[in-house]
Image (tube, rainbow over all chains, first blue to last red; front, top):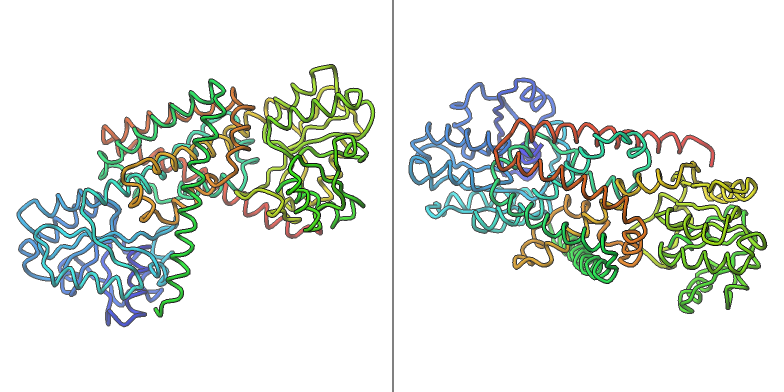
Length: 288
Length: 288
């Protein structure tokens, strides 16, 4: 879904004259060709390395293994294409790149865009417009490689920002990885209940929105949880401590504390929604 | 918001020829009159009791106190209008009704509809169309009173179902009250972080949907948490135990377990979304 969406965006923008696809699943390649998402399918990794830029668009753990394989075939990135990726965790990719020495032409990247859908059939060339892409340059980063990957994402309509690997992984653990774990956990909890049928029958719009992310690809999110283990555990523990405090306020009937917590959250959430809305208005005013 | 939306729906459907409003806040009454949501404003509770049906549309703890006051003024419901309410918890209202003897003409009700907005300015006459309303009849329920409240909600376009008070409160604790607590807890957690600014800056669409319910009215949800304490604590504890198990799977790198949990949740969530979508298609086929 992410790789296909980027392919469509880059072709529409004229950034890429030709997009090659490589996938271990021949069915995905055939679907990509059929839909015009890719121009040709590569039979093997070496054929893919003929490109100017290789975008690794697979789940986080597989992405690290694939990066190591590509680095092994390109004299640790000193030959061949600029390499980048789109995975949600950057620490395990930075570590994979570091094994075997500096890899200055690998640029870790993460588009903050997506949906609960997956696969090339869900590709959407407008997916990245007005969305942020975070690049987490490595200490040894080659400036030209970084500039090329920045232009690639800007061609797709994205706003590119840079931050450190550890900062990225902590921020995403709190705002994305933890919410996914909570949503999966809640739905799994309800699905295991003896009241299951009534629960889903009477769940409403609030529940639908709250659990939308629990329809996301399980393999991708398994890999995120494994790859970002330490930051995610910290976020889970922080959240659990707050939930335990809130539980105590409920148990003791502490209405003042409950209202204070709910009000503080509402204020922060309303400010976030307003900030997102005004960023959207701002983006729509700019020429694309 | 709920009371005003019902007033608009009942006037549009011709169910109510005149809607009286009573509120301790004169500004809310003036806004309701100005917007045409109510036809006239009552100066006191006794004036409101001149109606055929009184709908108590205030947060849960206040609703119980108001119900007791109305029952005291109507010989415990043996005189005056049929009484009903719209609060999210039914146990504390059933208990309030029971104080002082049976109240056969009070019909506890709960429309499964709403939004994160509140106040008469957010009133929407179409709010209940194709939504469920749960009535939880009391053992002593008067049949005519129940039938009248059922017709009221059906006039507003809702599907009415009946269930027991305890079953209602357990189902809603799991599917609505717990998700609200989790969403408030997460946003409060992030808002208290030293990284606060970066967190909200890089949060994306998944976070926006997951936390939408944290923009709900804090007083209403304080009252829900207080009124449904036991069922909510049970739901929180059940969830916390599952989250602790998931935490252990993350900590030990148990990818098999993570994928199994995420897959089970995705399957259940996809089925729920499909069920909601087909219920929506079905409802649109029926003449309103």
